[in-house]
Length: 476
Image 1 (cartoon, rainbow, N blue to C red):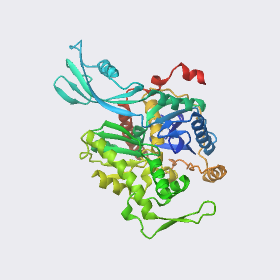
Image 2 (image 1 turned 30 degrees about the horizontal axis):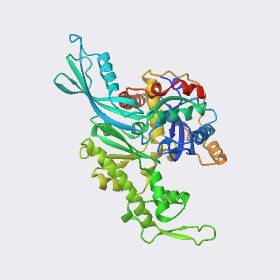
Image 3 (image 1 turned 180 degrees about the vertical axis):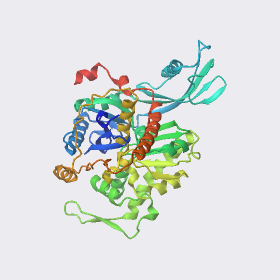
């Protein structure tokens, strides 16, 4: 497929502390070229749940405006939106079905009927089944079947991972996007989007836990034997750390956030006991000196609690000692100093920072290689999964774009009210590259894309059809 036929896909991450919009397009090697980046402070969202519609809309509009300012030739109409929040839950269930026509081989219709039966699973009132993910199948007495299609058997069964969420909370997110004059292509569970952005083939095979430490929630997705085993949303994250600092040290919220980002350390024993931070006094009061070690003690206490929840969820599925790929930390909270050492100490597993560079083309600014953008990059990958599998057709509008020279990017950024990450030129492919090397790279890209496709193919349900109703149309 030629580059001109590849659509521009935009991921929109609506978080508690920030709203990020990233536009990307795949090159001929299957790598993402970032065409636009916009970021704005989030308002009206608390722990992943929309609390104020109008404030959330303004944050989305600011992020989209800055994304377009970073590349004026972009035309953005449709977005992939990440969804999280403490209302998201998951449960395990088992389903079996006796086939009527046992003489024929098992086909996709049999699998669809088995999955459809799981929508009868009891869930609390007000919740909605978001997705049903088959984990492993059984055919008669044969267990752990990955793909039963084509086999013969009388009874087919499977273990299922069911993801649920509050219906009204999800519709409020979609309403904010609609009122921002954007079309929501799909709503994607944020930990699954982050996982696609930071995992590689070896991680999927070895078994890993993706821990996305955001502003309002910590999202978790566990993979083992190449399939999704568990998802969870922990209602503690960066905002709670900031509030602990504010209350514990008696400073303003903005000062607490700045101290956390600039001087925060997840291990108190590694902090300098002789270092102090001077905070300006309020209304003529004398300046306040704060010990860096005391700051680290506060941060470590909350991060230890979050990681205890991670261990709890791993023990629930008996994978607390069998994840050979360990813990992959991503999200804004993963930038804390010594966070991997604390994670290894608490969980007893290896830990590393997950950067969203598995699928990015070279030549981009280093600021994009930041764990806080994992969800957005994963949302773009979800869009390409839908496009390449033929589930969605793209109009191809906005195909006329340019890569902005670095000098012009700096001019645009200087005019913005808040800093926006610069968009670097895409990696040039017109060097003296041999055709054989190009073919090898394309084959590697094809295999990598196949892995991402398999990851998303496990997610059978579509969010949008479940939450649309007449009221959403009338509001616009």
